[in-house]
Amino acid sequence: MIKRTGFPPGAEREITEVLGIRVVDRDGRIWVGPKFPQDQMARAIYYSRMGGFVPPEVAVDTILTNPLHYGAGGFEGIRAVRTRYGDGFVELPSNIARFVFSSLAFNLSLVNQTKALLEDPNIEHVEHLQRIPREFFADSERAVREGDEIKMGVTIFRKDGSTEKVTVPFRLKVRFDNEEKVFSLKEMEAAICSLAFLNDLVREGEFSADQLEIILGGYFRPFFWVSGEEGLRVPTLFRREKGSPLLDKPLYFAIATLPWGLYLDDKGYREGLDVLIAPLPRIDESMPVTQKIAGNYVNCARNVNIAMRLGFGEILVTNHKGEIVEGSAENIVVLMTNKRTGEMVAYCPPLSSNILAGTNRDRVLRILEQGLEVSGKKVKLVMKAPKKKAMIDALAGDSVWEVSAVVMMGTGVGIIHIRSITDNPALKDWMGCNELRSEESEATPLFLRRISETEKKYLVNNGQRHPFVDALKKAYDEFVLAENGRRITPAYCMDYEALERVLGVGMDEFANREFRHKVGAGHFNERIDGLKHPEEIHSRTREVAAALRRAIDISYQRRCKGRYPELALRR
Image (tube, rainbow, N blue to C red):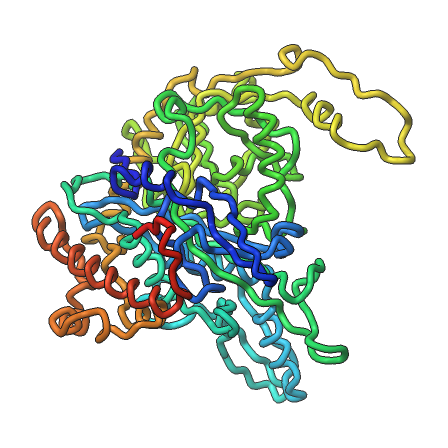
């Protein structure tokens, strides 16, 4: 794996010399605020509240903003990778669409639009057929490609017996400066691709034939959150005045990058993870479990914190049905082998088991559905979460089935296997030390023994990596790179009209006639094989990088309020 910092050598020294952020308050007093290490990891972020791209250290929000208090925000995780088709992203439309989908947890626009349909007295009812993640991601890819919106399809049933199919669009409406507007899928794609250039994540170099290489500084974190401007209360709705209609509180939207190499410890990738079965069950459908909502991860943090304290690299989480369903931030697949027949079955927890609709999970499912062969045998896919008891019995040798492999997957973690699984139900009592006893219960003390006396450790496949793991990793890279790189979005491959809207700068202001002609001719939309034509990719990269540098300078000049000459500004 290639590891790159995302900012040039020497920048670390330069950054340490920058003064704190200078702020003038309403009474004219000058304050120097703190520096945050994470703000030193990139040159720019995208922040709707400040109108576009800004240096990360100047992006501010009130401490009374909603997510700090109530968790009303959501995010997406996106990796920039180096491929034979250039530096870019894997199935970027899927991540963008899921981000918009997550925002609907605090946005009732779809409900409101459907409710409006039923205000027609001639309509009997409306039906909506929910999509599975595969269908949703496919629709998002089409929508980005065609410059369209993701839509929910509904069928209207009228009282006269007639029917009509209509669509209701998914939309991300965010606050920009002092106005709200819809941020389109194309604009989000352009903002992400631009940020890759602005933070020096797209570079020239050799291309690898058959694998995806991590760009260390290229972990992208789009984030939305409910504004606190309309009052700090639990509801994400408000009224402008008494008796006026209810409105959704404004959403803010930002994109940052940070250097995430391997999400977990290097040893785990080499030898496999030692994991703990979490003492607390995963949240249920009373929370928006299929969406990446900030507050959902409190449950994950509590479980993984105790596991890390006890020396484990990760956790396996059960749902309220006693099924093994996820890691702390990863989807899973469990490979079981019948000891009598040799049959191999890959169990993948379905969405109904209260898991996140992972984009990597969807790709792994497509691979398994196409048929993955391991040691000359085809693996059968079953959409079912294994029961914890059945897994423990198989690990202990008390079943005709054995647990051959447990694989975790996600944008942050990639693909990694589990070496051992430890079960310790007594940890639930240990976590009770931080809780209160209910009033009607007896005053019975918690009975705590040494943790080592109550745990049971089981090796997966005798602690050895099963061939399934390497076969899946190889198939994953091949799948992503197949069809001439169709699933790859090179960073230079963006909608430049959307880029104009994102920057607030016309292309004729930052690009010469030749560049504009190439954009019109679709020059930057071509997929180029870097193994055959590396200079073609490098040439496009240089052209776009130069144009974006000019564009961001113009954008900064229009939006910034002058400079303090004594501050060492990063450029």
